[in-house]
Length: 153
Image (cartoon, rainbow, N blue to C red; front, side, top):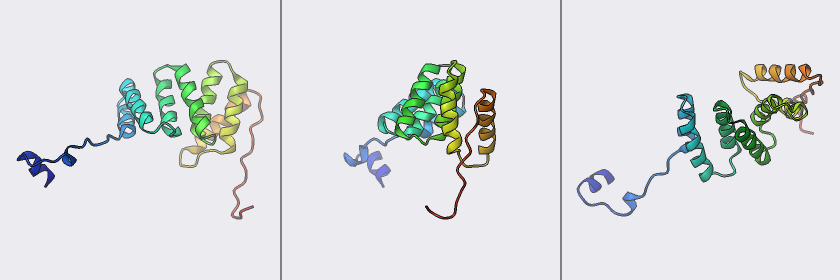
């Protein structure tokens, strides 16, 4: 009925409240379309609404990487990891940016952190193998993941 009241002049202030946009989903859709600059704008708006959401910061870092803004990507990965030290994707992405920048020690540290708590899911194994191979290529022994146990300690 709100539509009809507004259409025929019976609106109230409550009916005119602006709706909050879902900037994160908008950013993800724009990124899928290849419009990275627009996606970054939406990510910035999402961070404004949720400044301590590590996943938004991680997504921003990925988008910055795709646009070649490596310094910004590194900064956003690091901020995401300040908020959530177990964010596997941030460790993974940051590691390869650091490796590209010529910081194998920093890269190894983040690859190890990634491998200690690897992601779950159907594609996880290929990322684990890639990280393991990268460490071996650097001459670093990859850590072994803790065994999964049915019993609590």
